[in-house]
Length: 204
Image 1 (cartoon, helix red, strand yellow):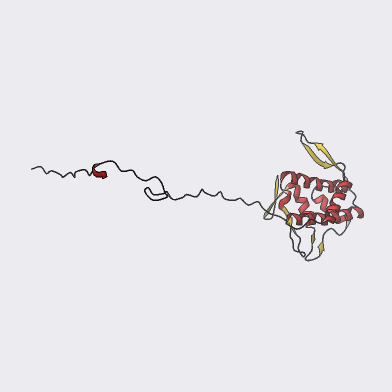
Image 2: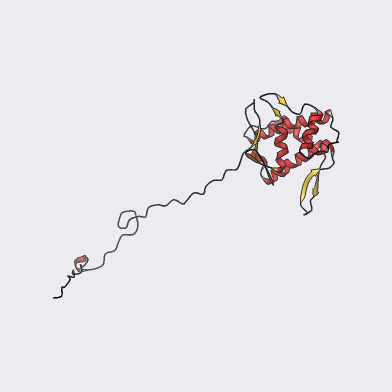
């Protein structure tokens, strides 16, 4: 399932990831995750957390640290080198968050949160990244390489037009290197016999 946001079509499991990375505008230095209440509003707005769930300062610090690490991973998708520090943060968060493997109603294995609360909401976010990677859509979510921007965006898959097979000109017969030469019919002196020309007869 895909969700349309503006001019982009983002898979459902990556909508929250893109929104989390874009909670700060580096050009204007406007951070919308400046308090635990702001983090609660963000998570409840995306349906990941109940309205009465507690969110503390430690949860906010973990969310902001995870946000910047995911931004670095999105820059890797845009061709930038991998940041070992960001990789360490993502792996540490994945080990600390309640992630577990379960099975859905159709018997398919899925990765999801093992508990609720703010930590469970962040676990849903990482589980969505794993699902997107399995579906091949994670690599199309990127972050701008400019230091003053680093905005998360999704690049659409462009469809290439099928090339028509090239038609080479047919070789003319009798010419060197092209086709089979025309065979002459045997006749007198090796020449082709000409048929007599018929003349029209007028009736009187």
